Length: 265
Image 1 (cartoon, rainbow, N blue to C red):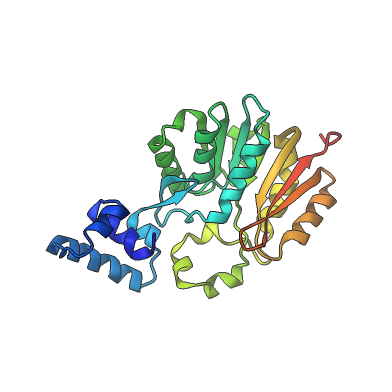
Image 2 (image 1 turned 90 degrees about the vertical axis):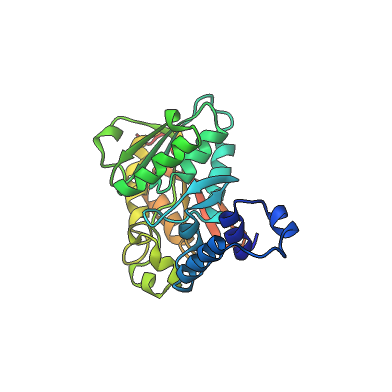
């Protein structure tokens, strides 16, 4: 659906088909007022997802607001690959680092009925949204949410996982203010990857081996032009073997998968 259809189907609480069948009917005053309110917010470049209060990810509806990053279609690649990588595991244990809205963790919990998920985030407000989405999708019993600056939380100590997945902040600090106006509404904490955009990759790659099972996998989303840098970090650590790089729908190297070396740890 285009943006106008999304707004109208939301306000009218109807399907796209019903909207088209009744497209010539005059709008009631209350509907016109609600539509005007949406338009005022959109003119100020507020993301439509925040205005409507939800977005779609992996075919599921997720609550989103200014506490969390809006899930992007390319992040679905992480979920799709994690599903394939977990296919032979009876009860996969997966860590979603920087869970935000919980879109990755909740999607995996829904699609892997025997898996157990842990979702971490440094932002307590973001975790409130993630917990809501887990409850909404009846997946809260298999997802543990922890407030943590990456691996810092005591609750993570001693835990090991089959997969660690993450869509970390990867935009250079100085570039954020130059991005389109809609992005300025999103939490900077979820966008800012430090001076070179690679701060969180360094930390995750350095610390993750202690939390991965033997042959465990690290699955990371990355930004444009970051592939060589991240591959270099993985090689330098000597803890991993890069197994694949997956391109997104625009041909950009978007997701990298690395396996923990057997001899490490």
